Length: 176
Image (tube, rainbow, N blue to C red):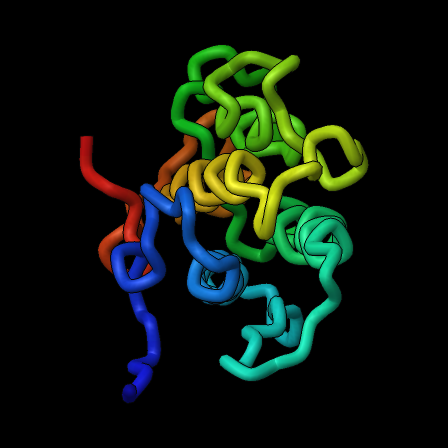
């Protein structure tokens, strides 16, 4: 069997990753967040993409915790090209209010229900057979929300210009 290098959400089994080994979904999340980090111009910060035979701990919680404390937050914090949440622009009082925050991103990824947010810090959320599917699907949703990049300089406030860069990604957000 020849393994091909997965380069899209579909190659990695998303959005239906139930009853799968954790390898392909994990590769998809790592590659997708790396695309967003590159788009945000966060040079040098990347999530490690595992090789197929990379030995890993039985407990995925450590990998998920690393993803949640390192890779995904870096896509929204102090990025030279920040990601914009267009829904926040009408109520923003300054240009910072237009950007995604990590907590807003997780909330939106969980469908707007705070009690449904799965985190790697809660072992109850992680008690799944091989791979935390609900956690992975929420990270898939969160990564897909990172598609609008600010194109104006912050000193031009109250003018906020941004562009949809979804088509620049291999791991594209599905169109509604």
